[in-house]
Amino acid sequence: MKLISDFKDFLNDTVNLNQTRIDRLEDRVEVIKDSIRSSDWEPRISVFIEQGSWAHDTIIRPVDGGEFDADLLVKVHPVDGWSAAQYVKELGRVFRDSGRYGDKTVVYDYCVTITYADDCKIDVAPLVMDREYQGTLEVCNKREDKFEESQPVEFTRWIREKNGYSGNNSFRKATRLIKYIRDIKRRFSCQSVLLTTLIGHRIEWFDKDSSAFTDTPSALQTIMGRLDDWLQARADKPSVPNPTLPSQDFADLWNDTQYANFRNFVNKYRKWIDEAVEATDRSDSIEKWRRVFGDEFAKGENVAKAELSAMQRTSALLLQSAAHLDSLVDNIIDFGINVLPSWFKTPPHLQRRRRD
Image (cartoon, rainbow, N blue to C red):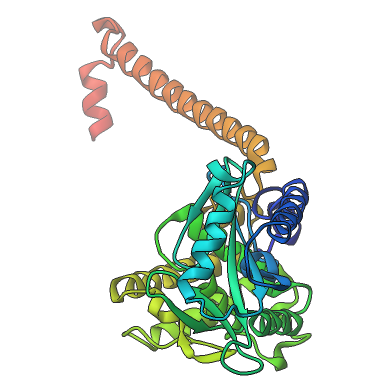
């Protein structure tokens, strides 16, 4: 069974990042923007760009109650003589020297991360425009001190296009659900940009208004089925090119063992999803969906299930009691016959007659 209403509740109550945290994220990002604008960071700012799951609207609530991640790009004009590492280091210095962010700041290879304990992490990364020629965009690799071409806006546009083909926001909903499976099960490794790209490639323009994406569980079943078929046809790690920058292979985020593990578990979860959809009894279907998502799925069913279990235990007890009574009666009859006085038993001549 599809249990469409249960999926809606599951997404709203468990999977989706709640609106309160989204509002708080947006407020914090605005403060970060103001802090950068008013700082002595030398690059001239063009615009701020949302990136990643936040921009794609596929961000989910952390399953462990910890922080979620959001990405913010600072698109800037180039500074003469600056190396790639300098953009990141200098941005890190600005945050470290700040009274507001000093104890929240860590500088990584491409970004500066601001951590709000038990809530969220905001990665702020420089994006240099028009450095070599007009129209180029480059992120900054501090570790290797080099510029790397990037197309974040075009990638977000591609994601939105795929979501439009799926209809009913199905691409985003299915992506959140698959991310939830990844995070709650912890059985495979797949970074969000790679996972989102793999899912996006499973949707085409002709899927628009098709029954394969008519609702959330249908979209999930369709995507997992197509993804599994694609993976099973590729025993060795394949290429997963960035759809907007073919020179970038997202499969580099895996090693061979991680790919093999991902391939195996997608196959397993695909089968579990098919079994949950094919179940004809509601209780059976819920149990099968819980095998995929855990006990938070259809959690309102817990009381009804407990009551049913109590009834089943009572019925079993009654059946056992009845069987015990039958056995007791048989034992009493056998006992009564065995202890009858000899004068009450059948006379020998009648016993012979009966045998005759």
